[in-house]
Amino acid sequence: MKNITLLFFVVLTLVACAKSPTGRSQFIIVGAEQMSKMGIESFDNMKQEQPVSTDKKLTAYVQCVADPILKVLPAEWQNDWEIVVFDSEQINAFALPGRKIGVYTGILQVTENADQLAAIVGHEVGHVIANHGAERVSQGTAAQKIAQGVSVLTKGSEYHKEISAGLGIGAQYGVLMPFSRLHESEADVLGLQYLMLAGYKPEESQKLWQNMAKVGGKRQMEILSTHPAPETRINNLGKHIKKYRAQGIKPLFKRAACSK
Image (cartoon, rainbow, N blue to C red; front, top):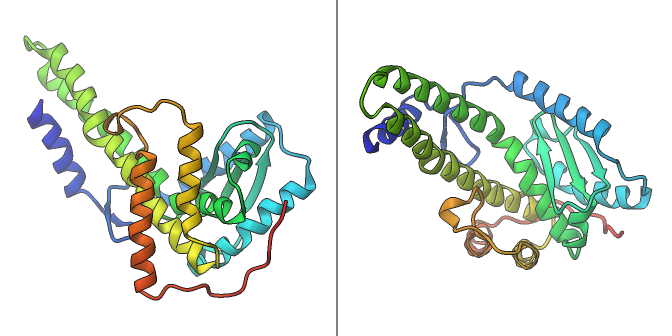
C-alpha cells in the first residue's frame, strides 16, 4: 500500500507541467478552454436552478466590493468577470473558470464589513487564477487511471480486493485531500495579496475566519478534512500579512467606500 501511494506521488511529480502563481509545480492535463467551457455551463445552469437575488442594492454592494479586487489582478485577468448574488442561506461563495463569481446571501450575514467580503472574493478568484479546478480534475483523472491499472495488474491476486480498496483510501487521504487543503491555503495568500493591493484591511481576513469558526459547528480532524482548520488559516494569514508588509505591498489606488 505504501509503495502504491508512493508511486502515485512520483507520477504526479514527474508529469507536473505547470506552475501556480506562487511558483508551486502543478499536474494539469486539462486545457484552459475546456475548463472555461465547463465553468460557464455550470454557472448558467446554476442561474436557472437557483434563485438569483432581486435586491439591487445588495447586488450593487457585492459588485462594489469585488471591483477593486478585480482591478488589481494580473492584467490578463482583470476583465469580463460576471458576478451573481444567489438568494440562499448557504454560507458560501465561489468562482469558476470562465470568470464567473457567485455569492450567496448567507455569507453576507457572516461578513461584518466590506473588507471581510473582499477577503472572500479575493480567495475565490485566487482559486481560478491558480488553476485549481483544472488541477483537481487532473488529479482525479490520474487517481482513477492508476487505480484501474493496479486493479488489472493485481487481478487474480489473493489480496486483489484489499489492494484495490486500499488504493482508494491512499489516494483520497494521501493525495487528494492534502492537495485540497493546499489549494485553500494558496487561495488564501493570493487573495490576501489582492486584498492589500485593493486597499482593504488585511487583518479583516483573520476576523472573517474567526466568524466562520463560530458558525461552522463541530469539525473533522484537519487531516481528514478538505479545508484547513480556521486556526491554521488565521495563523497563516497573520504570517503573510507581516511578510507582505515587509515586502512593501501597498494599495494601488484609493477605493470607493461600499455600503449595503
